[in-house]
Length: 350
View 1 (tube, rainbow, N blue to C red):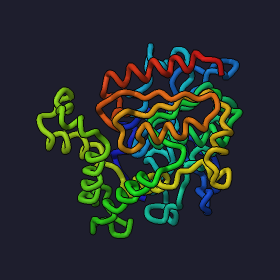
View 2 (tube, rainbow, N blue to C red):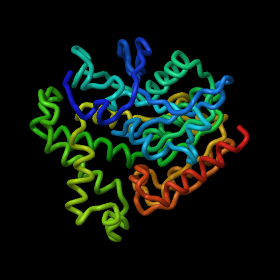
View 3 (cartoon, helix red, strand yellow):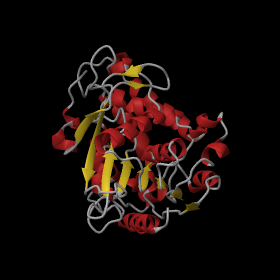
View 4 (cartoon, one colour):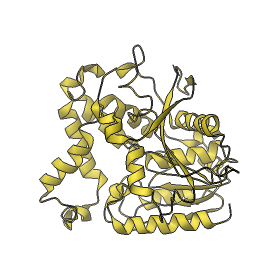
C-alpha cells in the first residue's frame, strides 16, 4: 500500500465508497471487502426507472466523467435522471493496487477483468440503491467495454446502451498498444518490479507512457491544425508537459497496469465460446454505437463491424479532429453531438 495524494477527495471528490463484499475474480483469486468508489447526481424515482450508469475509462475517474458529461440541460441531466458514476477497479479510487494492503497490494494485485468490474457494479446498484434495471448504460473507451459487458451479461437489466469510442472485443492493434503501455512503464529502473516505495518514483516510465498517448490519443490533424492553441498552450512541448504529463505523471503505475491488462483482455465473446456474433446477439438494449471519426484506437470501421451484430442497434460516427481524447469533452462540437445523440436515445422506446 502506498499513499498518493492524487487520488484524494480534494482532487477527485466528492465521491463515496461502498463495500460490495468479497469479489471472486474470473482469473482466480479474491478481492476481499472490495470497495467501489462512486458519485451520484439527481434523485432516484419511486419506481427506480430513471437510473443511468456511467462507467470510467483507462486512467479516468468519476470526476472527469462528471465534468465532461453531466449537467442541467445536458443529456445526462440530474434534474431528470439518477446518475451513478462507478469507478472501475484499479482506477485509484475503487480498490486498486496502490490502496490495497499486503499481501494483495502493489505488484501482487490479482488480474481483474472487465467482467469483474460489471459484477461489482451490479452489486453496488442492487445492494446500495435497490436498482435492478437501468434506463441507460454508457461510457467511453474502457467504459464502452464495460457497457458492452453489461448489455451481454445482464441483457434484461439494460434498457439502452451507448458505448462510445470502444469495442466489445479488444482488437489485435489495441492489444499491442496496451502491452506497449505496460512496457513503457516497467522499463523504468525505478519500477523495481512493482515495489517502488514512493508514489512518484517511476517518473521516466510514466513520461514515456504519456508520450505514447500523445502519439495515439490524438489525430494527426489535431497537431497539424494546432488545436492545442485554443485551449491555452503555446507549443507542442508546452502541451505535452502541461496537459499530458500533468494528466498522467501523478498516477500510480500499478493502477495503470491493472487497467491496461483489463483493456488488453476485454472480450464479451468469452461468454459464448469465442463466438462474438452470438455474444452480441444476446443484447436486448436499444444500442447506439458511437465511434469518433479520427480515433486511432477504435476507428469507426472496427466499431461498425460489431454494431452490425447487435439487434436494435445504430451506428453514429462522432465527428472530431481530437481523436480518442475527444472523450475528455474539450471539443465543443463533440459535446454537442454527444448530447444530441444521448437525448434521442433516452427519448426512444426501450
